[in-house]
Image (cartoon, rainbow, N blue to C red; front, side):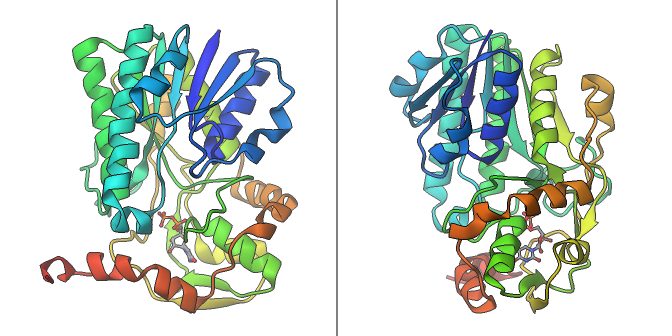
Length: 334
Ligand code: UDP
């Protein structure tokens, strides 16, 4: 069996590649290394089944030949993060929408048996109901969320029109070892771990009572594998722990002082995945509890040594576009 993992040198991708190799598959990683890092796969470099290809998935001519002979495709290559998506929407459209179309066409031409798309729970925006089911209204709040949703629509359309055996998994706040440490102000775990190493206080947004459905990356890799093995198609499934945790609790587990920074416009007070569908249809179950997941991250804290250390002042500057564009009424400014 051969699998292609786009974005396989990224955070989630590298965990999936490890899992697939363990399962005995041959794995081709396509990554342009714009945010993915070869170091994420360094521990697997002697695996005979692994092939690493530097390619931009939106460049169809360069990417498509690598899908020949593939049984499974996992499409994880994407640009992430909110702020740069507001500043550079065209880059996000190219990577996340054009890139997805290109991968779908490559997979269709190769006649693959399964196609799994990594979608984002950010498609729900600020939901009306918690836990949030897959049937909740779709309300992207910023270009990252929109472009990931458009990618998902393409995938579901390719099922409908071309019969591609594809499905989509909507990830909720994935965390774990090797989460990205680029220069961008991004996911809370990377921010807090770098602050802890530098002896700086944790920058808690608001009062820290907001909750997130943090999902451990090994559970996400397992969900991707379950999806590839199932015969479901044309559906989107939530992938979450189903047990939201507050930022206060995260600070408590990491241990250290906190400073408070303003709440960002358009961010939900809670994310909470209704995971009854994926449990029922794919038989997937989250296994790593929050305390255990945080413990495993602290064991690997040295990974964040080279990461940028964010202070309230730096965050205020880095998130300017977020406040300028998403604050209520801001869209009416020239
Ligand atoms: N958060 C925080 N301090 C930070 C960054 C994030 O308290 O410096 C909080 C944020 O308010 C949110 C949670 O951590 O409740 C997760 O934020 P992240 O940006 O990782 O994901 P998202 O908001 O997209 O769910």
